[in-house]
Image (cartoon, rainbow, N blue to C red; front, side):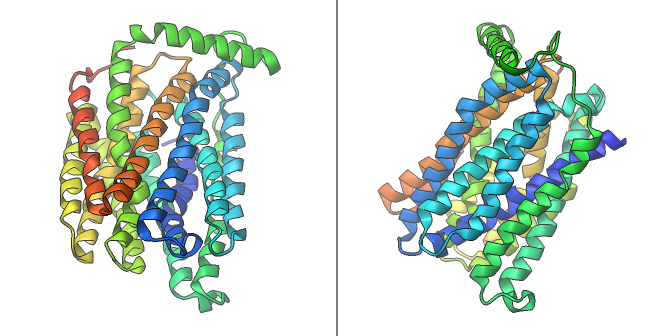
Amino acid sequence: MNKRVISWALYDWANSAYATVVLAGFFPLFFKQYWSAANDATTSTFQLGVANSLASMIVVLLAPVLGAIADAGARRKLFLFSFALLGMLMTAGLFTVEKNGWWLAAMFFVFSIIGFSGANIFYDALLKSVAPANRLDTVSALGYALGYLGGGLLMAFNVLMFQKPGWFGFFDSAMAIRTGFITVAIWWAVFSLPLLFYVREPAANGKSVRGRKMISAGLQQLLITLKHIRGYRQVLLFLVAYWLYIDGVDTIVRMAVDYGMALGFNAGHLITALLITQFVGFPAAIAFGWLGERIGTRLSIFIGLFVYILVTIMSYWMNQVSEFYYLAVVIGLVQGGVQSLSRSFYARLIPLGHEAEFFGFYNMLGKFAAVIGPLLMGVVALWTGSTRLSILSILVLFVSGAIILFYVRDDKVS
């Protein structure tokens, strides 16, 4: 692996601290127990689902336009770091939110997701500029693997702060968690620097443009892509499949801790299980990259989706915290694989010179899925009064996504 590949992959190490500590871990836990403590479990689940969905809807509207503009002006890195900075500042801002300030916490959370997700559009778009075509699976998997390891290490440190606040000079666990959000912002910033310095900006489509011309050229290119995307049949099929199955993946990531707490499991056990997922995910993501290059990327994704279907069914019947641990291990084995191989599979399908634009659509559909999943779980939980029933709604997403993926050719089609 050369310096550019490692520098690119380290951004996954950097921003996965947010995905692990904030998105999947302490935010849903702290939201339910601290910021929305005055509300019952189903109401706080609904509030969390709405916040996730609102943020994702904003990203849906922005993603393809921003991707087209970035391609036209050769400004992928500029957009990446602009959105990343927004995510860092909003994450640090969570420190300031007092108890029962759920609406303010939700506002910071929404803008932090916009920053995190927006930056990922341009991060993903840089993949083809650092990895040769025959190494896309392993390089993409390396990013996710480092993300699991980096996110897990900071998460472990934050868990120690949470469990032993006195060791760090905090009055209680609440202050430890709030301070943990600041550590995420710092971690994210520091480990983003290698990408800034060592990954080159790909050339613009044709002659590079700036300022208003860049915006105009980007919007024009977006309109052209929208008109001709039907000609990229394999891209279109994959995007529909990805939109469906990644909804289930993202919903489990964002709502697993909330689901476990609604079942009455201890918060400490849930966070420990999340840590297990991270550290299992590190070698598993690398293994999936290797598997994709040997048995085919699409078949490897199918294996991951089958496991997710089994996990969803088992989650409905879960009664003991030990079962939560078992499922955390199983998810850790496939989560990074499905995510990383989806990214590398898509990178093979898209035309050269339009990476940010096409990854804008990719991330748009991924975030549109995250609009539906958490909101669906929240609405079902609120309507039926049963969190268990809400988890089963995810099954249709995995199954239908796998069916459509079956019709996508497992080779280079662009």
